[in-house]
Every structure is written in structure tokens, then in C-alpha cells.
Length: 448
Image (cartoon, rainbow, N blue to C red; front, side):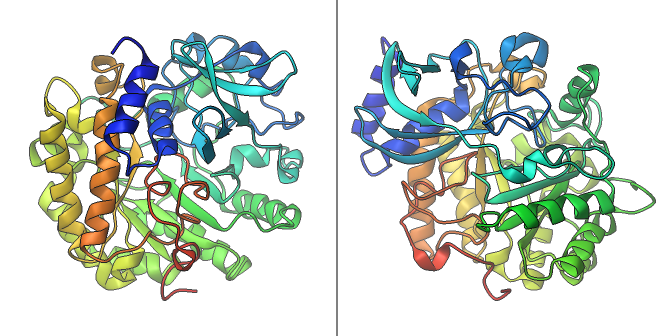
């Protein structure tokens, strides 16, 4: 293909059942977007501007380190963008911002000051940016910002509580090969940015009180408790009790206000039951990549401490605690094709990933996925700066929906509404690619 436009249009023609909004979204997520100076906020670390800035809520999700991003590191880009209109008639599409100064996609203002998305020099969509929420303008009693303690993503739908900012899988022999959580911690500390390692429970509650007070439209519907894996202890607690105590405190202070979710390792059943007892409603024991060989190579810490077979057994066991619909493991879509060990053809990669989808969906468990962003400080990011082919991502959306249909499943709870033009989940297009279903838009089945 002579241009990115030609590639995208070819895929839209070949896979017409995949919404064209999802084709552009996947390309932006896998390859990033550049920002013209005219499109950057005047906000750095303070919540004083008009645009909600990128919070770096867990990973960098950038194609360069902060020193390499230039002005985009000093004047933060928006947390997300919305695409609409243009020559392709795009419906409202929420996209997580992944900065790449070398991307063929660029957000810039026109002569009238209206933001647009440009590809190969052509304006292809209007761009909306999230307004600064009122709750970001208020600080905690200790001076910390709400954005630092309890940032919101997915256009305000989800409060993302990364309460442990590093991972105890550490070093080349343990870290997942696509994950930059530990580097992201280091780069923010090196830049002098506030980036609390272990968030205090009372700070989290105070930030949530501010959100609850000023989120008068009740746009925030769910919270996610997450952070790095705990192989020993943090603050004297193992993983289930460390993350679970935040859920317990939140549910006691704000009963029924939000759908409570936790992203943690696949833990033994007794630990999973403690999550449930603490008030967690949805459990995300992420399985990362399906293929056995790739799991062992790309997730060496998880393989060493738990092992792939035991990991999958624990996921199935957790469905007996939470109910299959409320167990939603994530995988990192695209690492299947990462050199030097990944599949060399899209056919092979899709076959492997679909095998994993069928395994879990046959048990009533609906995985979801994050589109892989090849962050440059990770081993797989360094070796694969272009990520996986766009065709892989488009065919995955097709295979994902077909597998859900095969097993009679609907979109998972806690992700907002499905359907093109309606979805708010911003780090992959799986919700954009599912049919609109009012019944699937809300809460955890059997919980609220």
C-alpha cells in the first residue's frame, strides 16, 4: 500500500461487517497519534485548563518516553479524543490517546480553531476533547489532585484507581515483556511529577467524595481497583487483602454508588472469595496471551509463580464465586504477532486467539482486550515499534463478535453501552464492534 489511507480503506472494503469507526480506532491505538501545538492543552500538572489532560493512569501508552515527546510531555495532550463526521461519516468514537510524534495521524486546529484528525494530510474527522471535569478542579486536604489519586477515563465513565503503582514482577526474568508499569513509575518520578506509589485508603475515599459531590450528572458509573502484581506483601498484606481493603472501604462509604471492579492476578479460590466478601462485583484475572509458548516467554513471572494451566483453572474457579458473566479476563491484543517469537501470519495469530476466546466463552466467561501499544522501554516494544498489523486487529474484532454469537453471549457488564456511536471503552474497539443492546449497557448481572 502506498499510504496509510489506502491500507485503511482496503481493510474497510474487505471487512465491511466491522464498523469503519473501529478500523480507525484500532489504527490509532496500535500506532498512536501526533499533536500539533495548536491541539495541546495549556495544562501541565495543574487542573486549571479547559481540557481534561492525560493522566497516565497505569501505563504510559505512548510511543516515546517523556523526554522524547517534546512539547506533548510539557503541555499534556487530552486523556481521550472523540472522532465524528468527516468524509467517512464517523459516528461518535472515543479513543484513548497514545502519543506518537511520528504517526501519520495528527490532531490539529484549522484556520477557524476547530480540531480535526488528519491522515496523509487530509482531514478525516472532527475531533472533540474532554472538558475539564469540575471534580478535577478541587484538591484533597493534603493538596494532592483528584487526577493523581482517582483519575477518570472512558469519557468519565470509569474511575481508575491504580493504588499500587509498581509491580513485584521485576526485571527481565519476571516482568511481562510488553508492560511498562515499572518504567512509567520511574519516568514520572524522574520528571518530578506527582505519582504516588501506594495510595492511602483515606486519600482514595476523599477523592471519591469530591467526585461524587461534583459529578452531578452521575457520569462516573464504575471504578477499577488495580496496580502491579503482588508476589509477597504490600503494607503487610497479600494481594487479595491489599486490593480488597480499598473495595471494602469504598463500599462501606458509598454503598451502591459505583460498580466495583478489581484487576488482579488469577488468585486461589479462597482469595477470590475474599474479593467478593469485600464488595468487589467484577473480577478481571487477566490471562494476557493465549498461546502456551508465548505466555511462558512473554509473561515469565506469571509462569514462574502460577503457571499458565493453573492460571486458567483459577479463572474458571473464580466464575463459581462471581458468576461467569462477572469474570472478565483481559488479553493484550497484538502481542501474538510480536517478533521474534510470535506468529508470523495473521491467520495463525487469529486462530490461536480465537481458540482462547472459545475456551473461556464456552464456560460463559467473556474476555475483553486492550489493543497493544508497543511502548519503547519494553522488550517487545523495542523489537516491534510498529506493533501488530492492522489487519490482525480488524480480524480479531470480527472473530470476537462471531465467537460471542456462537455462545449466545452479550457484552460484559461494567463497560458502558455497546455499539458503534455509543461505546465509551477507549483502549480497544471491542465494545464499538458489538451490537447496541440496552440490556447490556449497565450493571453487573446478578449484583445490582
